[in-house]
Length: 318
Picture 1 (cartoon, one colour):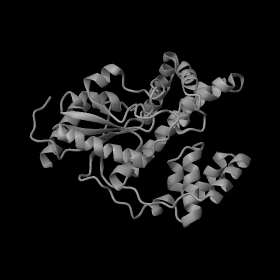
Picture 2 (cartoon, helix red, strand yellow):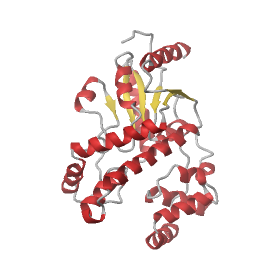
Picture 3 (cartoon, one colour):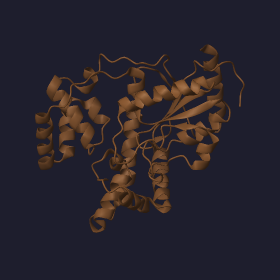
Picture 4 (tube, helix red, strand yellow):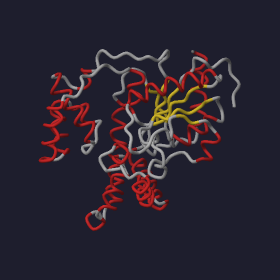
């Protein structure tokens, strides 16, 4: 590990699409710099969801301190606002120990809230929510997603067509304010004292698709179906509309366990859904505002040295 001057002002982020190699690179960087990892992942917050989230192993977490992992039950919701609050506290505690926070993940909604801040959006009105629920029951959420695309194509591109909660909230905001989500957030301000230096992983799309398929197959072999079965047994209040069970992989496994004869292709659908997630994450990276993203190829044999040089050089500039 490099010995550098006081790191209290250093804040770095390592972001990229799912299966791009963020976890391994982050662990390697932690051997070279005094980092502690803050997870920027909306799935890793949930306890007992280990296989389908590709959660760092206990051995990996014993080597390097990790934050915002296993902090809530799968039956609970976890918001971007809560992430911002928890991350600010984690940053404070890490820097007080003389270490550097390293934000690692691919949930750009969280990163966006952290860097660009959150504004006071209108409270959901029951009449709009009831109207959307009725329409979704009749038409399905993918149809409402198409409607969202008409009014707010940027937000629609970032939301899964089956993500009931986010589609509903985005449409509610449009109905109440007459503005797309991006415009509704114009008054927000970050509470961070320093904008993170963001490292982005830019990987060949075809190779990424292959890695996603390979990783999903590994999850299945490791017992993804058994994990979902255990979750259903251990958490009686768990149901398929909760944010935890809308995570890619878990949604498809849940559908298979509910009706195997109707979902024989659940593995292929899980791979497709993961690739779609990666596409949305790449879109976020390409259009991210608030801080520049410095891209590196995670497959390059020199990537670790390149990242180390980059971090050292940017530390000297702080």
